[in-house]
Amino acid sequence: MLRWTVTFLIVAIIAAVFGFGGIAAGAASIAKILFFIFIVLFLLSLIFGRSAKV
Image (cartoon, rainbow, N blue to C red; front, side, top):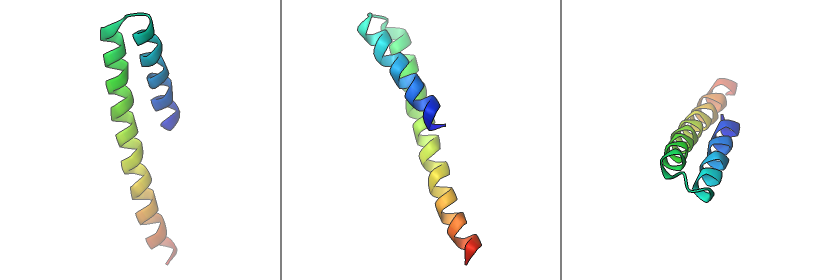
């Protein structure tokens, strides 16, 4: 999931450089959503991974 976030971030940066504002904003918002989903899943795996081993 983090790989998709980086991919959309790179697409947003490239689109912004070439002047495609709408595409850049859309790709950046998708990257932001995927990043927050990744963080939530990562924290959940840390919490439940520790409790399963104990």
